[in-house]
Image (cartoon, rainbow, N blue to C red):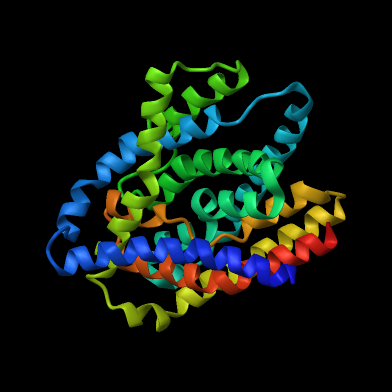
Length: 310
């Protein structure tokens, strides 16, 4: 019975995303909101809304002395996961040519914000959200450092300036002190940050829909790389995470939450990064959509196993 509850929760999140994508798709086809217009919104999403999401996530996590070690443990777990994923994807997709950066990014980064957080809430309650917030923070650190390194065609080698002066890093630099010092911003500042952050998912999905409207949708089922990304992202990586954490003694809510986030489909910001750094948004849209569809089946399986072993 629990398995079907998890499947229903995963399906619900994917369905909500799908509705937003369909709206964007229809808007493009009716010329109400086209791909060319959505591209002009990409910088708004990248430079303003993304930092607001990150800062807001830190403002919504209450720092308490007794939970600090647990939060740190979750942070380290997700850090090791992303580090291992970075090593895993580095030698892959060499035959994909100019699209290899997209597939590497799609394999490494999951939709932890929209898919992970709500599912963590559904299966593990408020404590699950607390642990998942650590995962979201780690995701942003890696996405706006190593992720940019993957996707940016013009970036050659390590560049400290780009590491520090990007929306994700700036959001984290602002957010972490607010979290550690338990700063409560006045409503005059906190509420606008929340409002801006709330634009992230709908705007990103509308843009996603316009990109899909200009791509061959059936093509996502014909591209062999999509199947390999799905295999690694949706099954191999979360099941390996589950096995390793179980062997080292991690149990309960932390184990369950880690598997929820690690089993999430490809991050929806894959398309945003592709647009920002001159990559093929059609390829990015297809792989993101492909893994999102399959995650309705794979996420409940991984979560049910974690619940059973935890």
